[in-house]
Amino acid sequence: MDKISNNAELRTWRDHIPLDWKYTAGVAGERFLQLLKQGTIQASVCRSCGKTFLPPKIFCKDCFDQLTEWREVQGDAGFIYSFTKVSRKDADSPSPSQNIVLVKFEGIEGGLLGKFKLGREEPRIGMKVKPVFKKKDQRKGELSDIEYFERV
Ligand SMILES: [Zn+2]
Image (cartoon, rainbow, N blue to C red):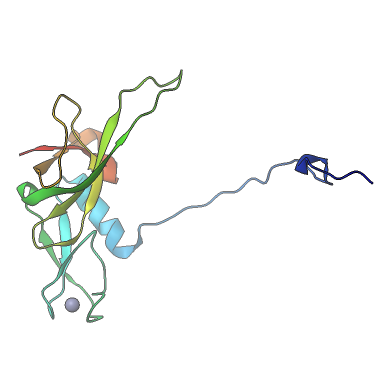
């Protein structure tokens, strides 16, 4: 008996299974995205411990209190916490490399991922940035409604 060294020689079937699924962003997430569509970033606030969460949560992870209070995040309070450069060079999409930034805001737990403005400026950790929204009629209630973050 020959040793099978190629897994495809084992008894296999090739086919596909059609799958459909829908995710929701959850109660707080949906509200957050609808507010984003309006051009505002809102975080949820815990009245017991004062912590503020972004993306918003409906319960405080520390005191388990329900979070019903929301507060607008000041756009210019953002700073780059981390970033990575993404390069994609295929025949179909010869797009230039893009910097993806994790932006945190002073006094707020969590943060938002987004693109850094294309151009000559390179992001650096700690750089103060603000969100630039897409035009109102192009927003879809998605995180990408923030077109990019740029240096303040
Ligand atoms: Zn709390």
